[in-house]
Image (cartoon, rainbow, N blue to C red; front, side):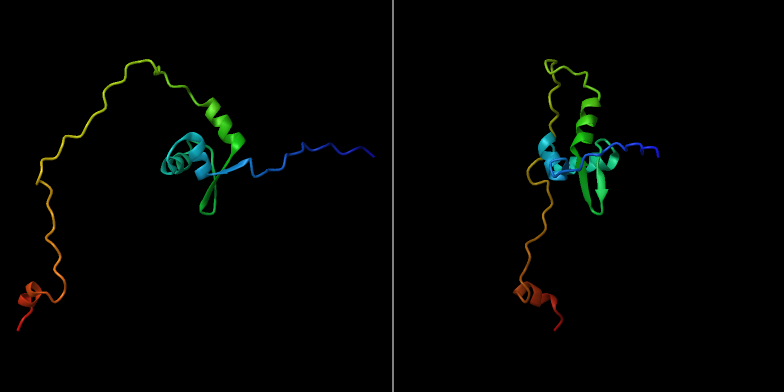
Length: 112
């Protein structure tokens, strides 16, 4: 009888290997909405289980290490941030104040 070939043993997943969206957001210093968007578009590797997204630490680490580096140097002068022009006062239309039901203004509107 020939011995059976050994299958490569897979390491069991632990709680430290699996990250949720909040943990990834904290790790990358990004908002939750950006992490959801990146996972949906495949920018970062994630797995959707039902309505939840989970991320494997090893996959995330490998993806971040293989991502292309930015060509912009941190010492290069940055262009000034654009600012929205200030809105002139009084240009915003406002709704009139609500009148409580049964007030004198509403009683005039009701037919006699």
